[in-house]
Length: 173
Image (cartoon, rainbow, N blue to C red; front, side, top):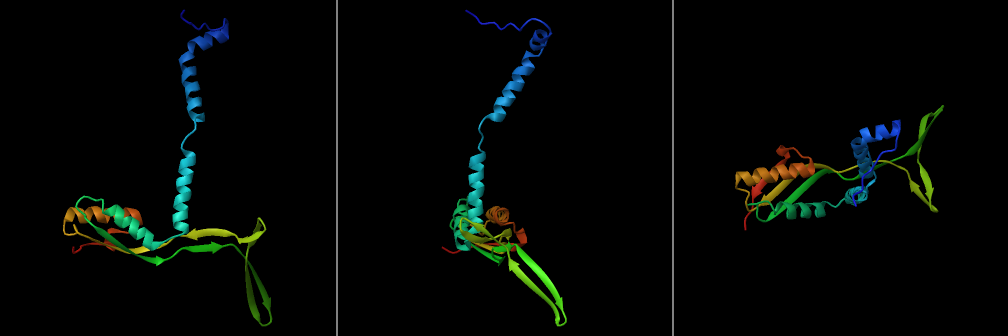
């Protein structure tokens, strides 16, 4: 037995029969929009990146970069040293009051605190992440121009440094 759909009679039925393929595409689009996506996974990855910066550890970052860059063909064993201009900096909300008296002006500044579950926490306005100043990469394949170029580009992509602030050298051993 073969199922065959017959539209209702009348003007509505005529429209449904005429635009049945458009309706199928629209329904499929709605289903795809409602389909669960990887947003939770992306949010978890973003939280992981935030944790990395929140608990910024220069030595751990250098180790991770060294392991990653060692995978570049021809590089061999890699050691990375990074220098930073400044560390993590947090800017907290504050109330500022200025008073004028005969002796001069006085400014009082007080950090804004909020109650959170019985604890008082400062209100964070923004975080300034570390700014890299330079990078030194020492590797066994540092005498090969192609390897130097690949490592320089990789370090630049990872740190945001310009290539003029990255040095790749051949290491002994």
